[in-house]
Image (spheres, rainbow, N blue to C red):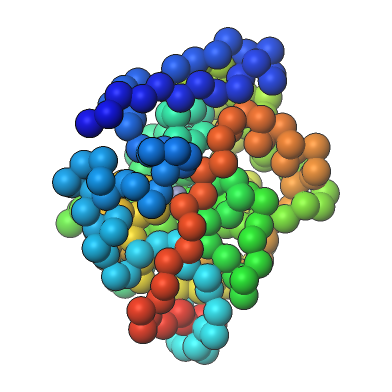
Length: 246
Ligand SMILES: [Zn+2]
């Protein structure tokens, strides 16, 4: 595997520049870009060979009977970390998704700029992914789109608690709930897809909320500077998959 160090422009925020560990060989530009992921490691073969890959352009959604989204947030000891690929909120055990008569537990929440999924061809400046796992190790991801608008208090809180070094987590106060990142209206699109990062594993249940959440132009700029990279994998063909919505 090719050793590569990516320098993040933390200097933009007066932060020390940090190098990403060599193990994180995949990325979003140059030789480590998404179109090369399958060549970086045999374990990443699905990134090229998979047929039900994410992200997608969500369009022609079929009206179906989807149950209301069942989410609960109780975890208190969360932390914000920049892992070299994304800004991620590590979540203590306790946040749940009830889906298909199964319990899924939230593992982490992370961000992409610009959005990975598109809705009717539209890209959003920011997309959050809430990654859940059930006891059979199956994954479900709840996605939230962000649009430019009013300032967002949850994003403001995260911007006040940015990590200053790669892989060094900043504890978040118990008062901060991930629920504050979600829109009021929880109606959603559902489809089958994959992880959008290596190893691009398929069989992921995707639930993308239809209503975007607002954040200000200044917050978009600040979040982008903190992220330091554009980390959106391009969209993939549906290959006969259907998107269902309420
Ligand atoms: Zn993601």
